[in-house]
Length: 219
Ligand code: ATP
Ligand code: ATP
Ligand code: CA
Image 1 (tube, rainbow, N blue to C red):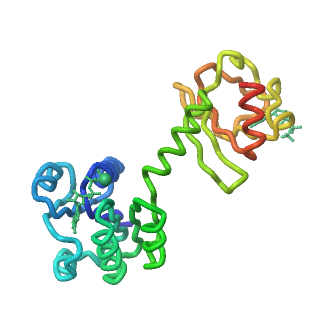
Image 2: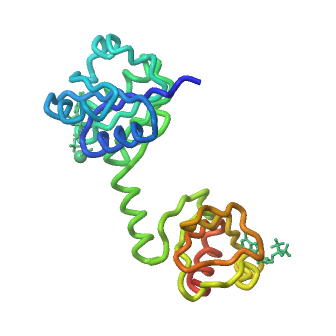
């Protein structure tokens, strides 16, 4: 299969971080920014980086934008630019278009234009950090729906050496541990006799209320 190709429009803090991570993950990335200095700084880190105005249709065509699998509009502050770039990527036929929004209304406009995925990095990071601040062992979480989540939590000292059956997580708290990460490797789908080690990372799935209960009573 051919390597997926990404085009990142706008190489500010968000766009450049996203672009470099995609490179690290082994994908091809074209970076586009209107600011020459920004492009010079990024050119050695990306497959290609070009100075261009992403609201200029002819320029985008000449870059072969329609051949990209995914386009990310990482222009935030200038809503007009962001919206125009998003429309052009969609119109030129980029398969998946993702755009960063700085406000709910900006996000709504992007969705109405047919942007496949709108992200709110500042809002989402704020929510994430709030959760981590009030739940000290919480490393990360994914919301599956309003009521269910997957969370990553560090195994505290008080559970060190206990087996899952001793903690009785599923029967007692209604949460399943789907994986345990430790320095030696990952145990996927651990069973009743697997032991927790302090410092391991448990990946837990359950309803939010059950996860909260497990976290406050057992952890
Ligand atoms: P971040 O919040 O990610 O740090 P920023 O605040 O530095 O970004 P933004 O205004 O969100 O800047 O824009 C991100 C980048 O998008 C900037 O480097 C800017 O030069 C670039 N940019 C703005 N308009 C265009 C455009 N029409 N075409 C291409 N790039 C653009
Ligand atoms: P279950 O029907 O919940 O799987 P079980 O009666 O089949 O339980 P075991 O699989 O032997 O019993 O596990 C005993 C107890 O250990 C379970 O009731 C559960 O509380 C806990 N347990 C085992 N594996 C896990 C896991 N991956 N995550 C959370 N708890 C577990
Ligand atoms: Ca910004």
